[in-house]
Amino acid sequence: MEDVKKVGIIRSIYLYLVTAISIVVLLISVIGAVNIVIREYVFGVHGSWDNISYPMDIKGGECGEDNLFYSYDSKGTRYEVDASLSKEDKKVKVDECVKRAEERNTLQNDNQIKRDFAQYLAMFLVALPLYLYHWGIIKKEAQK
Image (cartoon, rainbow, N blue to C red; front, side, top):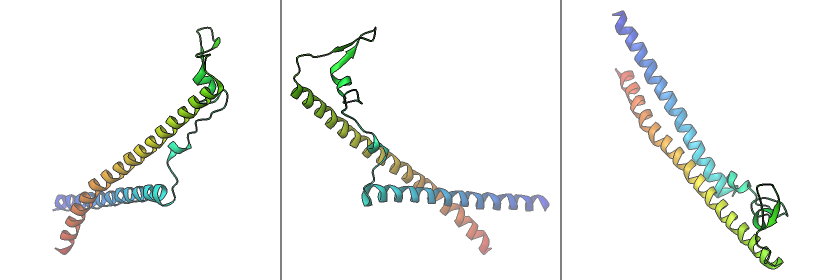
């Protein structure tokens, strides 16, 4: 009789524990999905990819003149890649680089949003049936 009582207690603990964990996962998934919707579509505050800048200063980032128009040999000596480019051509090349970088930045942000949303949706779709099943067993046993 005592073993049956222990099994019943362990079973109850299991049912309530799985139900509680399922509720927590459901809450996390809903909060995460709502956060994405509010952040991206209500307030227009985009993800971390939007915070990456591509400066156009002389030695700056990806689209800086130092990266676009100069190269270095194995000794570290700097030389111009295409000396025939005029100042206007260089500006066009920098502008094109910035445009490509911004497009890539937007695409990365959109893809990150989709990945995050898919993760929260998957969490929800796994946790909901677990919760409903285990909570149903608890309710059924409580009615006995």
